[in-house]
Length: 53
Image 1 (cartoon, one colour):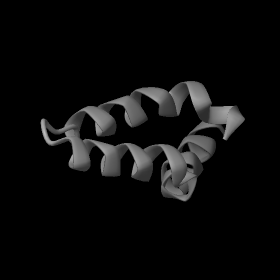
Image 2: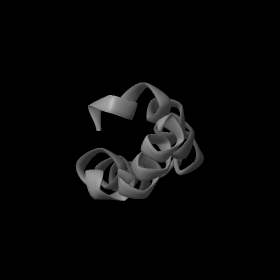
Image 3: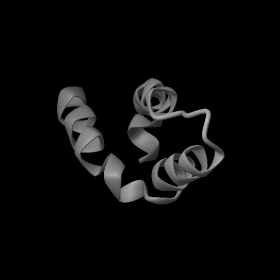
């Protein structure tokens, strides 16, 4: 993911902001999902790599 990390960071930040919650348990679950499960970044990474070619 290093090749497109700079392009994906705003995407990740936007998603985290959208799923943030005032409920601590929901915020913790969203944080875990988006920080620990890098597989969810696979499709956006492929799109960014294709755009660079």
